Image (spheres, rainbow, N blue to C red):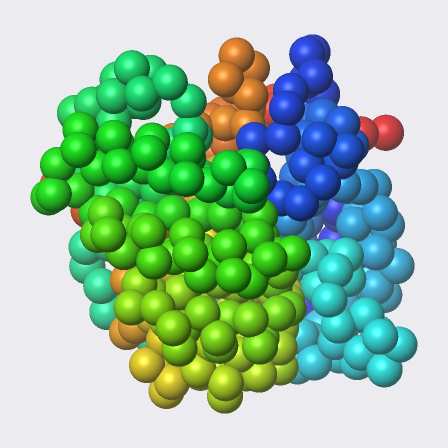
Length: 390
Ligand SMILES: [Mg+2]
């Protein structure tokens, strides 16, 4: 079997109305216009001489056309190769830019789309799901949480919590950290959420790097979250602040979760060696695909670090890809099951219409994955054509 074609497609769904940043990243108000002005994704389609086509996704937070161009630049490396040689192809792609400083960022996100498409091809051609290729169905049922509650009036939040409970969720995540100077006010809402949700609901808090300028605030908030029995404390600091995370993990009982903004096994290894996290959250659309994410997850296992895949606000494709990794990983903890879009009034068609996520059953907050070949998804090409960038 040989690769005969590689095509990347940049997708963009512009928002009609400008929205405020839905997360608490530093300088959010200054960057929201460019980062949160559209829903974006870049898909990679790889076709073989056997007539099999696989698809992967590159996480796209800014320029889909840049990612598309990178994929097309490396296309000559892929043509003629056996798509099942995922390790070899990954290593060649890595070699293109690793000694030029591109070990993070756009290049890894472009590699992610290529690598995932290769695994989809392999699964489809073998007639087995990708989780089978990874090592089988270690986790027949996948615990899942609703992502995410944003801090607003408690009356609104109560309805949202009830909706998630009615849908079957027993775990949900709260976005905090929008106003680092005013965290005590935010924590009052967290307390009200805990009170309404009840003690049986697992709650987590996600800061999206909101306290990256102030370690002591991060520490104080972490202590307060412990009072409300939150399960984990996600990304309080900058993604590469290993010292800061190691400090927080030393000083807090609440589990520290991070990794959605990290890119490769070497940087994760530095965190593991410092005992700087309890839960790792690589996103296969960012960490250079399934091949690299599996290495990160396996390495995490050796350091007693649990795996909770990040899916975030990408498309339904990476949500599907992550289910396969979750089904395989012995140290899998819980799956991020996205229930909200950045924009309350404009839904994301890449999340809801691009493909069906291969979920056979969702009951008691647990997902059972389909047994279909590859990722088990069929891309809706009408959505692709409607939103593709020229
Ligand atoms: Mg997060």
